[in-house]
Amino acid sequence: MGDTDPSLEVATLAGGCFWCLQPVFDELKGVRGVVVGYAGGHAENPSYEDVCSDETGHAEAVEVTFDPAVLSYEDLLHVFFSVHDPTTLNRQGADVGSQYRSAVFYRTPAQKAAAEKVIHELEAEGAWGDAVVTEVTPFTNFFRAEGYHQEYFRKNPHAGYCVAVVRPKVSKFRKKYADRLKA
Image (cartoon, rainbow, N blue to C red; front, side, top):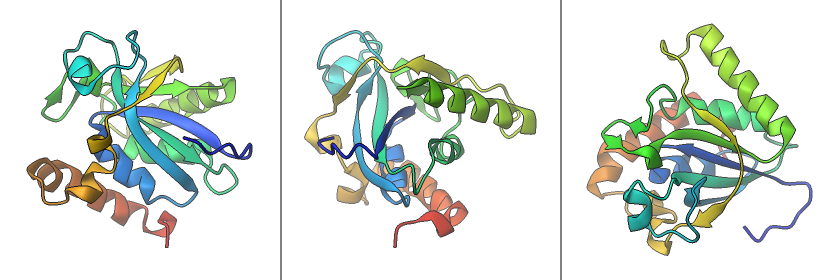
């Protein structure tokens, strides 16, 4: 991300289409930057087409740089789990394939423990009604997606997918977390 401030942390999260996740985290207090890309696969520098082939093992993901003094990793995870369905394997709505899986790519033992704790809490609450299938897996790689994918919703608010899928998710997020939005 280019930000070398040692007080910042990075979270790598996959929850379906990255166009839906970026605008949510962009607006959250404590977030310094969000990049969309591909995480967890075995191919080097995959293209969007490579990832969509469902053969590279990558998930559409976001890399979120945040200030843990403002926003804890656990709180970031609570937002993450509220803006996608973590109970559907390799799918979010009409988007189907392993690239749309739900995953937390942890970078430290503390991130792993936090992810496991939050998932356990959600399941104990029955928050989703079904078992959470989110992968909690060690971070191995993240490749920045092509430029046209970065800030896609902000640049294309009237595109069909943005109107039908992204905007409702962002609106729901804004209502639920109104007190945690950037000014």
